[in-house]
Image: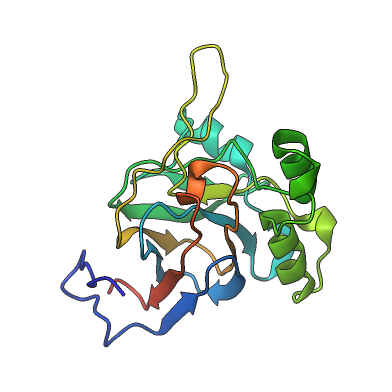
Length: 216
């Protein structure tokens, strides 16, 4: 595991109230309370971490990529970005970003999209949509509740024509984002299992999630 990179003297390994290691290719979820600081770490570098947020008290309110991009006037997520819900509310604010490139346009890989992009031999490979459907089901939701997501650490250049291409990630081992929760949120992650394009360097690896109380 990489060395812990501190962004505040008040945040350390010792005073984290949550510390989770997410295996390669696996789903994960946890609740982050209003005012807490969430860190998502790309522990080994070049690992896309597909992420969704839901209002922890009303799952019908959830992350909106369209509203988030429109509010920021930007196609990418970075420090200062306000994560906006489909109700127009601020769910979280990104307060730190050591990588600088995070996509919210390309969506999650699925068995169907893998088949279209990479051929029928890939149809039965594990995919992020499978992870999300499995994880939301633990909270009483269904595949209808899986919406377009954030792809932390995924490098997706957008051409002036609007064309997008997934290319090699630029994140280094230990790169991270930190977000302050502006409401109680349910965090949902698929630690992307994709091996057919370079979003994971063709080698999916573990990730880490940490949470601190208050202004720590």
